[in-house]
Length: 320
Image 1: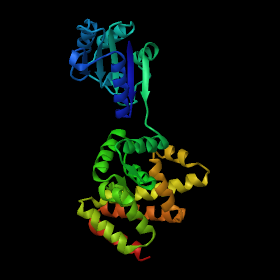
Image 2: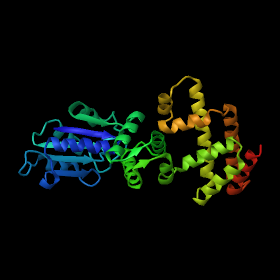
Image 3: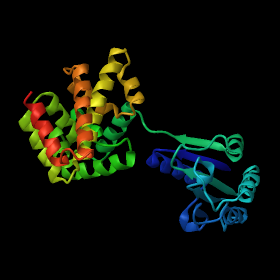
Image 4: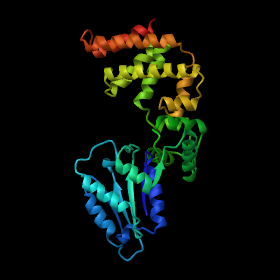
């Protein structure tokens, strides 16, 4: 049996692979499973291994990882002969070898002959990211399974601070459950670090609310973490642009799910952006973007020091 396991959610991909191993009674200690990386082992060696009968078991498994030659990227050490050899092997079903092409991305080049051939001959198992509802439910179940509980608003805050990656979320859940059996918003604030983008969003809100003292304090905190002013200007601009885009799409009648997808935005992050941006005027957002753009030009042309320039911008905006 030959198949392709691919996608962007590594934890679920590993679960699919584990299920396949269980189905065919594949165990590493039986020495009938080999994992090969395409950058380290030739395709001819993999196929030679695949053609070798299993050792004292009914099945063996060959896992090919990181097959860049199937993507838009180039892989110099894979020749046309290698590709033809692989196509020839995979066109027939080897009754004793489970051959798995394992790729943790979704960037196959569908124009390539071999990809078209694999699509025709092999079983493709796509593992996608969980949507917001599934992510909430899965994380809640993982916490409950560890004998802990979490408030709904705390779970939303946790997911807003994490990437849509089950492995990273699982590691964070383990840490939280060691800290407390009842996880609250306060627990999340103590234990889960804010991403720099979240701090910058707080700074952006303070700018728009003309809270000069708060703006300067957040700015100084970011400077203590060695953040570059130019990077902060870009991130503030991104936050303003995000507020603008959400308000604009909202006016056009798009729902939260559609907006999150269009902007590649964490749905839980979108909830906070929508709440925080409801009182801001679109023209005001555009004006602040123009002022930041001018500041960026002044810094890059040497008219003003980057640290002094951003600090004066915050003081001037806060005093308007």
